[in-house]
Length: 453
Image 1: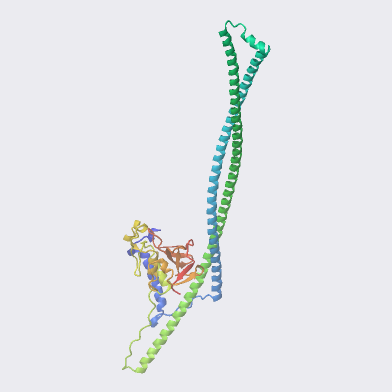
Image 2 (image 1 turned 60 degrees about the vertical axis):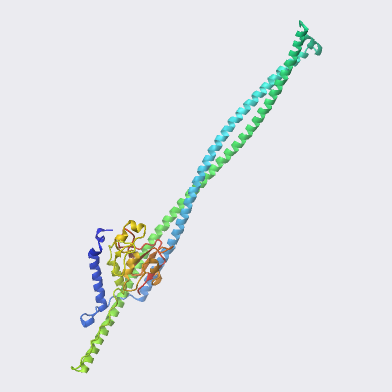
């Protein structure tokens, strides 16, 4: 906000002078030539009805296009948001697939190591059993190589005593028994190792299967992520196209609205001229009738003075309301501030406004500025939601100078006055000042409220 517009209530020199000039012009227009002091000027241009209709039709068509593009953009933004969420989901799923694949690879590698170890143990057990079986075969062959009897006698030859003979018999029995026990133990060990080998091979097969599935899932997740990113990028490009087209059509709407405002302004000035001309003629007729009445009553009589027709109430026209609003340019924002007499102290809200000290400032909030601007028209409540219903509503495509605009499709929270030419005046927010800015169409209500005309 320029420093020239940041001034106190008592120091709005430029704004006050502007308001005084507008007020003086309005007063001249309303009074016309009361008293016969001035003559009505020549008539201003008066556009035809067909020109007005054509201009309004073009304006309405552009407004319709803007509305359609606004809806398309809202849908596109919703779609883009959904696609962005899908991209984030696909990215996480891809991360999961990579983690699963790494774990499956590690499990398969361990299974391969376990299978090799189990196979080695099974092979070693098999070799030991074969060696034990060979030794046993040699022992049995040695016992019977000379025949069943000779073998036994040969084992006992050379015994020195019956005790020695018994010891040798016990030794042969022990040797043969231990060989058989060892063979049985090794056979059992070979069975166990073979079972472990089979289990290891099965675990390896399952681990390899899970690794294959995990790798396939990772590939599918990466492809899904790439597709989601591509869709999101395509939607973003589409959003940019719609936004660009919307901006272009808004410029056309602005131009069409300006043309309508210009033609309607010409028509309004012409109607004012007609009314002023009629008032002048009525005043002349009244003066003539008064003069005739005075002449017929003679010089000895006196007639009661005839009062001039009352002028319009202050602020009862669109231009008067606009002038009142414009006279407050640069006045600071104060939540809850403003009435029909001008800016007032704001009030506490227990939150944002208090943090800006609005309760200690003299100024307007958005609805307070409208109360002041339309003071000569009607008594407005200090709540924008009720102000929306205070007059009759017209589609935005038909809004004109002096109409009130509202924002908050899910609950009205702001109001401003339309000035024409795509501009509006508003008391914006805590920390701001009354200002003129381009009309904002985001979250704007579909209807403008008209109090005059």
